Image 1 (tube, rainbow, N blue to C red):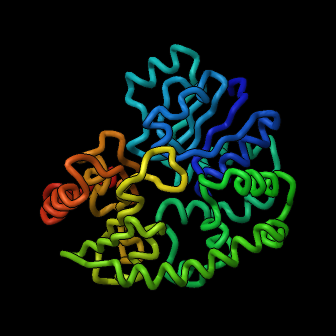
Image 2 (cartoon, rainbow, N blue to C red):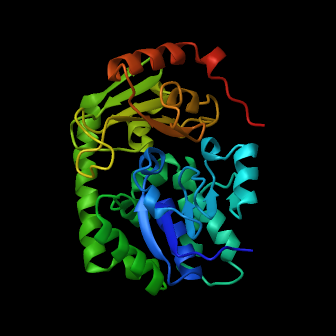
Length: 323
């Protein structure tokens, strides 16, 4: 049913980490690499991907041997899937709330994951926009842990992966000295970021635009929409550096993320935000309510101007209905 896996490439967020934990349990001798979508789409890590590679929580790559994901815009076309399968590839794509959930369900009958079993509902909610405002404001241990993960810190990512593999409770992971220090810093950094978000966010026609470019800070949509409250239906966050480059862990290029305000009643799936993410960047995308892209020529201001034009006509152009 499953291929011979020598390498696991996973996204570097909490969803990708938990999916990698499951796959590493199934394939203990496989090496693990943490990446992000732009690295897959740019071809920078093509040399790591072959028929013995499983990619998870990342865009589809035709040279891999096994593909697991849940993002709508990452799903291979029927033609791509047919070609992939004809070469021996295996596709596990499902509209699960997280990629970790997909991997977890595939192997739950074969292996015990007691600590993952406990946190999986929150991992699902965190990745699919299901976190309540109360849970977000409480900022519990798992949310703090999620903010310690970073593609740019491979040593820490593998330290955490090892803890997940060898510990049987989340408390043991939280109390690890290295993790505990990172979580303390995550709490402190969030306070600083909250102040920056207040300074850098403007709400225009119910879209909260947060300009974090060239600050060195990143944020997910929860912080921005919590700040915007009932005044915004969605947010657009600009990250990265004006002189950044793909693959430069310390200075990534400019990018944009779009998130629906999931704290509003029926706040998700009202508009297909992935249309914004793919307007300029053919490799952009994600979920209808949570997606992103790289800034494309002619530049940030032109991209923003077009996105605002599309947003202003969202009732017509961006209407999204659950099928």
